[in-house]
Length: 81
Image (cartoon, rainbow, N blue to C red; front, side, top):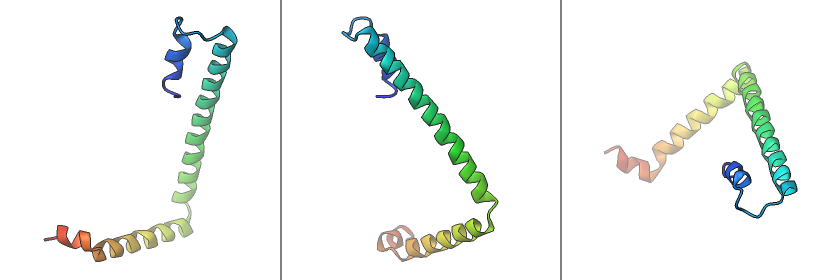
């Protein structure tokens, strides 16, 4: 809906009232602000992760476990032939 919202609001032939259009524009602005906040937060988390020795050890451990589990999976054995 977020991506369709501008077209819906700008469509002069739909029966939206002016106040409904204003409310939808405000909603769209809130969504954009939330998207920006989420992106900035993801970057902060990623930077923190990259600079944390504990996170790097955890990442290496998870990757090793994933490789081991994948190697043991019957469906993966058939792909190696």
